Length: 543
Image (tube, rainbow, N blue to C red; front, top):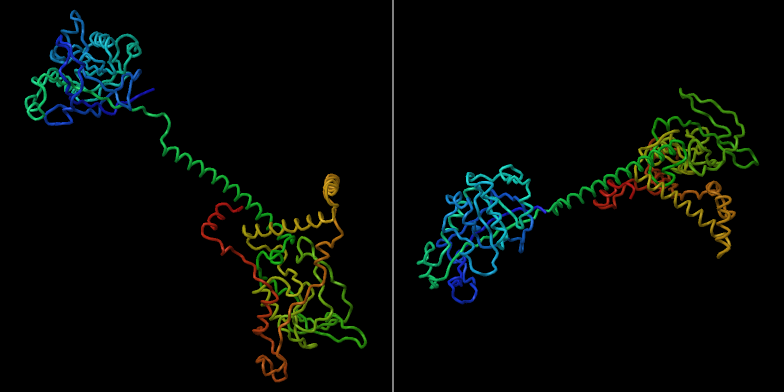
């Protein structure tokens, strides 16, 4: 595992009188840290940069720290490197004999002079309890030492020397190495020979026979190959964003297909948005003008029940001249709605009543051969000013039978709210039908077995004889609640001197009747949603 050195720190430690003077004594113990007492009277240094890790194998760390006495490995007297390194290693530099005879760990410091000398120093260090080895290039100034794979660190062994060493090896700049070597030679004796020794003795009343040495600490760290916590956080956030984007895109795609499907069914007349209470719609005035205008004509035969005013009527031409339509029985136009679209313009409509003596919007009676009426495709008749404003501004459904008056193939802009409501209504209808079917099945285990067998054979379970949706819609609907009308002509300013109302814009009573006939206004949006709910709905339209 790779390791980096964050800092090399050197301090001066004071020890008790050593036991190397051929006198039986207790092992030397650390008394004080002189650097901590006074940085101005003792040596201290910190190397924070230009440190190269040649090999980090066999590094023995305690809480990320490698420490020990700084020293120079002792060469054999006949080794040629003794003479070659004399100019770089002072004679007073601390060697192994200058250290206390205790089991303190050591850190070696030597110059890289040549391959032979470096090999000799490494061999000498292997005989000592060493924790780390530090090289410095003599020809290297303050620059960083060469990288670990440089040929300058080659001992012509193919890099085996790094594997054979049982300790980590580091390299520092030449300037830092020379400074550490110089102070290593200054602090190799007792209190009487070190720099500022007399001052330290006077200040702290120490024993002159105590000695001081350089203590070195290497703070190392192991870079993790795993990314940091913030990288994990970014990865998690990125994955969440990708998942949210994919889910949102998929839901938008599904909703887009659902909107297209609903629009297609609306254009085909299979779904009546306003009839299902999904969205309030209005009819374009151009399409309303295509509904025919007639002059009201009603003359019942003596002794016969009232007949439809359409048996005999005068139709308005484009130029204002009327033509009398001969009286003839009309075909029975009463039919039921389609289950898919109860008020589709392309389907059959509920028949108008045979006798329509008054406009159901303003509640004014028609005058025979005088009042102009507009007939809707469903057969109901109204004053043009009443029905035109109703269809164009209030609702697209017939005020009486709720048949759709929109043009064939017309479809408003479909929104996700419409899709959700239409699907909810369709699911509710299917659930009601399924519950009605289940209510007629035999109870208990036999009931479940019978349903399972019938669903396997026919795809449906038992069903009871209930009226279909078409039959339910074909049943007579309750007539709208009437609003009381004042019969006194003086209470209605729209009446003329003859007691009849003048044609024109609808009265306030008629407009109130329009709102009552139109029913409850469908909620086109979602105003009750909070901002967070609206934002969630935009991102995830399926919720």
